[in-house]
Length: 173
Image 1 (tube, helix red, strand yellow):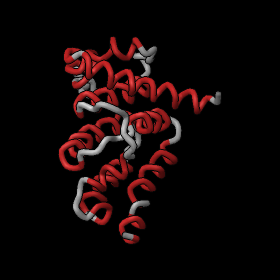
Image 2 (cartoon, helix red, strand yellow):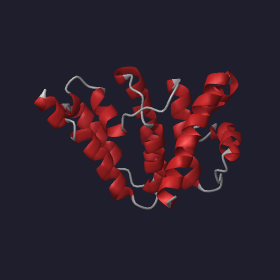
Image 3 (tube, rainbow, N blue to C red):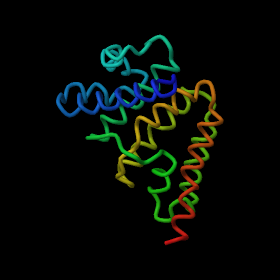
Image 4 (tube, helix red, strand yellow):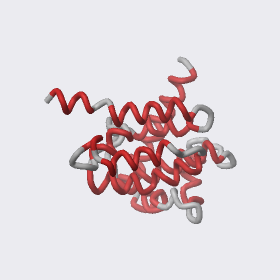
């Protein structure tokens, strides 16, 4: 198995584990909901440590904590299939033609650090949950966030492609 495939498999397993834990234990879910706040993030460390996440490495801990919080807050019952770019577009009636949607995407693409991107994702998750009501592909997003530390240009390109690629779908229908 390639390193990329094993990382992807680990991320899928983490998402599945997190979903299952949230569904069976409201206490765990409550702690994970606070994982994206620096002041209360420590409440998810037991969950992360159980998955052998290095808590001392921000570039590893923050993506896992951010995704765990998003899963808990969304009350997700499975890993979805919608990418972050597409999810942003789905929040608006005009989709990826919406100036507001484009502004949200541009703000996400302007991020330069893992800390910044995780902070910017927090309100986007709330927006997606309230407006689009779609099931995000948390495992793919987690993989992207872990790659963001070393190669954020390819990650940003994927998010933009995901946002804009559905323009053709709209015009074809």
